[in-house]
Length: 76
Image: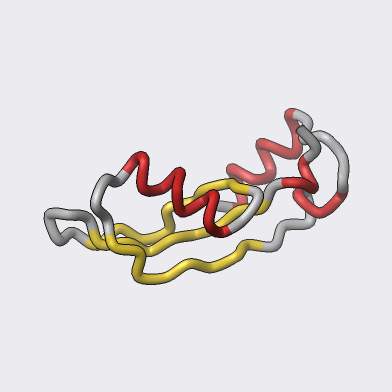
């Protein structure tokens, strides 16, 4: 899969037990797809906020390599 075809989203959610979880990062082709992935991990959660994350690594149109992944981890 090309890196340019996916986007990173940061979610702020309330779990079914009422706990607030911030900065849940999910990759997806769209916000809806990322939300579906999120709901698979956090069943019955309420999405409080969703922010699109722009990254120069993701926008290059190339495949991610080891150095790109390390840069993403360090910058998080």
